[in-house]
Image (cartoon, rainbow, N blue to C red):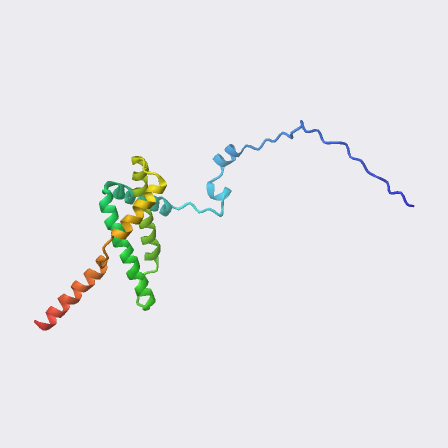
Length: 160
């Protein structure tokens, strides 16, 4: 049989860590952020968007729970109207879907925050939410009311 020569390497000492003169803090101070992270674009528009969301949250938190409930019902009606417009292939802004869903989510989050402050548990919260959903009286959303009023005004002008 052939015997192959075996190579043995000396073990690397674990305690020796190579010293480096690299200091990320000094480099960041010397280089602009765009040089270090070219894939991330820092724009002022993202800062403006956050400010708008903060204002919207302050506005939502200023409302009572009843007002939040009413607005959630209205927004869900608006969402239904958008879905109907989409299904009938009318013109609509597709970005409105996301905007309304986010607004509804923010309102429900603030509502849940208030429940947590009051000490309402998760299980009881869901029970109350189901009761609230059953008690909702179906009504046309504000945009449909506005559209109906405009049509009625147009008919009144035609007949006059």
